[in-house]
Image (cartoon, rainbow, N blue to C red; front, side, top):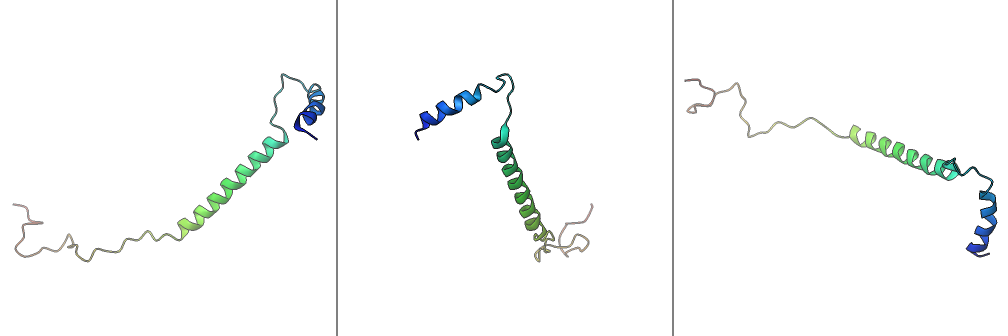
Length: 79
């Protein structure tokens, strides 16, 4: 069966519908449900990955503590 023949059989069925009323139908629901499921799976994956992240930063071994004063330097002194 050719596409044009299939369309000629479907067109009379379309005449029964109200032309002023537009609905997404079953295909719209399926697309929306697939998008919602995809977003839900992405959020679940993101939460799992964010749970594995360690936010504690290791102290820098070269950094000088703010409360200790290095002899011979003017850092930390108010003149």
